[in-house]
Image (cartoon, rainbow, N blue to C red; front, side, top):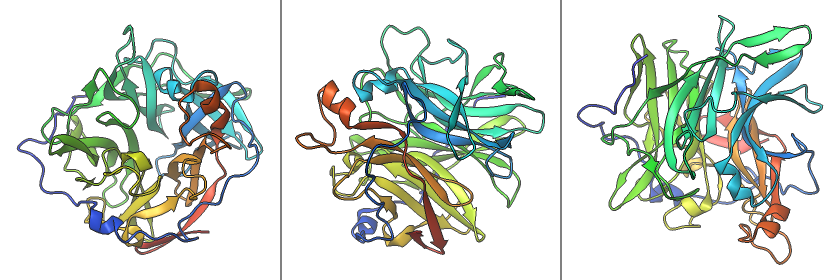
Length: 381
């Protein structure tokens, strides 16, 4: 499979998420998640889990084996400062029947990834008995300290299903399948940085378009904006020769520098593009809330218009502005996220010291929400 560079000659002008859209943002019950109260059960007792995604069937539904949904998520030992988890993240295979979670182990063997750690992606079960795992290989295998090089990689391990359980084979090849050359999208190859301060080429979200039957990946990307970078949703399409990059579905020139986990859900013949972002990623910071944002179009390639006028679909409540993150809308309009930071007396939302940060951090699945979609309007059910 060949690796495609960025679009030759540069892309056409894509739809923009603008300050005029965000000026229409209003608070209300239809777009505000309830406050999460009390302790929540942990997905894994001794590990933080975040950025979860289902193993999908090729029709977009969640894969069920032995009566349990199969999921993946990022994991790291629940020790030290929670922000350090990004430097050691591994993808975990999980199963649930609605009454709890079963740990099925790391998706890849130690050292199998070309990166020094594994970041978010998506997965689809294939008819040949394999699972395509699209993920972000961050850093470089064997590096002395974490860098922020990001590569979109596919591995296709065998899904082993028998009377005793479910597992993934360990001999899959890991291939970089799509790459930016810096023309249509900036190259994410920084050696210094951290969450919210780096360029993006990550979070590949798999989608099969029912209109043409073709496979696509949505990728969280960055484009140039003045002396800075700005968030964008890149599109890559599969063909006989591999994956090729297309024009961006959306850019956030001067509005937001880092939009994450883009994905598409088809509902009532409309295409709903969703992504999440932090409040500190807006320009200027805190000019809009941390939340799930969305756009709608008549076809995958657009043109897209913002849901609810502003793009806001779900925000954290004002009294807990960082309580959840990494929202993902499933084909049945369930919305998952993870429990992030909850304010506690005497601490801020992002405590600087490890003990306070660890006390405020959730590191487990947040309560599931449900959306209602009606043309360009969304509401929490």
